[in-house]
Image 1: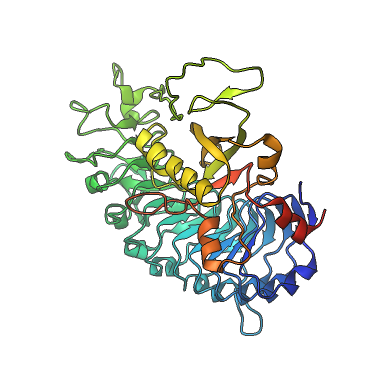
Image 2: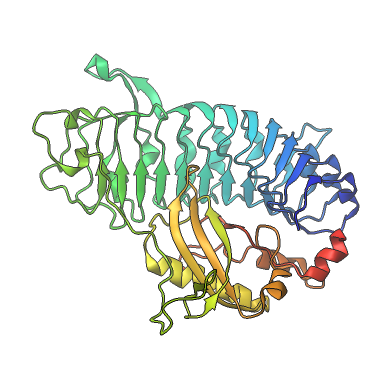
Length: 463
């Protein structure tokens, strides 16, 4: 079953609706303005469709909304804010998740937008212009900020250092700078000053600001942030000497400073290859006789995590079947998870995948009374959009048709009409907080399976 076509204006009749989750359904055309009549919405996701036209300002009527996800459509125009006579998204003061990435939105980011309790702000891969508003620094609850792949320019607001909970900052492919520019004593090294907040965001795990016109000398304290894992500041105007702290973060995996203006590296003689340092394209790597690994374009190969196979007596299965992790020959349902800002960067750490995601999945299926015998996670990779993608195989204990009635469409959602909306909201995002220690990271979007019962689909959508 594949839903498609326009979302009808009649959607506005369901005024008691608290959850609207239509992910990957094939809808096209504009989002109807009557969506604003659904004033009781708590969870609203139209992710991965083909919606076009502007974001309806009437969405601002959803004053109880906690989750807004319009990611992955073809929406155009500016981000609407209220003006005294019409509503706007700035009225969503209870919103925690604001996902508008992968669209064609344009214009400035409205300063009035940031009066919310946001945790995730995802505006990546649009056509946004202008400066980053300083009001962003007022949202101290933020954990993830993605502004990458836009046309933003100017200074990064200095009060960004107020975002004490920020873990993932993606601002790459913009025309940004640090603080006011200055002339280096060598004229050819004209650059900007690295902003002081670089070393004050003590919760930071990932910072990606490559191709942003950022310049200056990096503070050594940046590399000592306790949970820092990934630093990508390549293709900027960063100068030396490079000083990676004597006590860098024990979790630091990658420092990509390729294609900058670094001529000296203080720790060059005692550099440890445990940190994946990349300095290719810097003056230090153009000196004769340099053989250090950080000047090589060859990256360390890794083996992405896959659910380990038990030692099975049966080594093979009939044609078309695969051996599940619990040694059963099965024809699994397959799909893919997409994480836009996970709390981790490793593609091979088994404790993350087996103890967190795998166990959460199995618990979800069991709580939903679905006949699932095993779950297999495979080939964790980063795709072209810098999203973490994980292949999923779900093996079942019933016949294929019976389980197929429960797995339709794309996305994952457990719908129970008679249960409170809060329970349904929790079930619709069972992996939102699957970091066992900090609860960060973006909700995985599952492509290829959603758990509605066949009877429920018939009741609400007909044949």
